Image 1 (tube, rainbow, N blue to C red):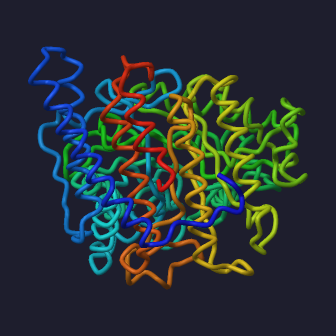
Image 2 (cartoon, one colour):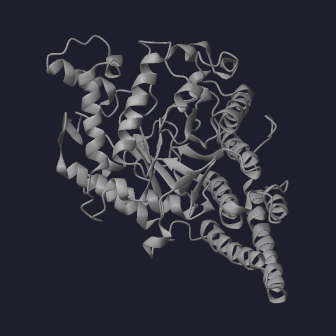
Image 3 (cartoon, rainbow, N blue to C red):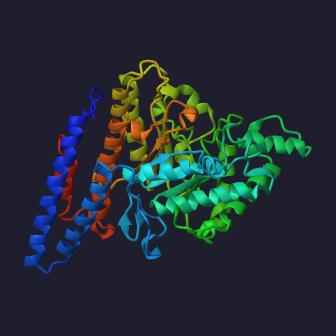
Length: 479
């Protein structure tokens, strides 16, 4: 997308939705007619899948947004997400992701006065077709802590996490559960260091979280506890629950103590092996921001600033760690470059995303998930039109990869909040009931991905006759 492209107006989007109805009706009518004249199984498959896509589109786009509840029926329909090459798959079907972040779900679920907000955000997200939520499976040593001290847990808070997992399934939303924070919020690595100091360890840096054997063992014990947790509502062990899309080792790990990246790399290798030894079924990701490091000097030009080379992470090297199933990248032009919005932000987004998609395609051979992205209302010059352009650019860049069967496998908006939680807003939150423009853009992207997911089976390998149908619908100028 051109950096100066303006987002579609509501009239254009509504016209697009209307045209999509007509197009889908045409597809169904035409395909059904062909099936009556043919015994070709491929035609029958296409008819069925387009019909399912239309049903989903009507759910996402109708005027009853927020009233559609998705109850999962037979467990055979709710299988683990797996990886095949550069794509996610479920039941041998592609699974391209339009998702979101809401980090506080467990804490809100722990209080009966706020628990309904968890249901509300899942309901709103599912009503616009979102299928994955990333949230915290940690709260260490702070208010309403899950882990009050090393390996000591608050059962009521654990039951709140059980509720989050159980409730997500009701709305056909899968979860990426992050296991610790790099930052101080919700405890983070600083809390582990504090626990170490309380136990008499001589520690001088929060980054010794990555190096000290005792702190490594604290973390490994937490991982084991989470993965082996038996949900009190579903009776499913977390490591066996398909509702969990993936585990995340850490939210935005950085290790300034060792800019070479060796220390963090050693930690990642040990922890990835540890997770896989307990749970080989689920996917695993790191939680990186995506900065290029010393192993790829030819790629550091894509970093947003020179400091990114000093934080001890290395996108390529880290993601070549045994046990890591897909790459994670975040997108914060306003935080990394300048808090004054400009076209330079959009140009950065395009080059940042494309470089990582190319590397996931050609070097890593794995899916890449853009796990956080957004624009803050606190940015100088912020306006909703720029935000819409930013979000549309992320979605369209991914669609360009999806169209080719590439590794650009999904994105998670930072972040989605229900009404009544405005006091928690860090500036990036989107409140769907109050933001029709964002709601329409998200819904349209979900509809596009639904068509990809339902119309192209894994065996299709993107070379089948359905491709021209996808091109016609998904890449029409108005879309």
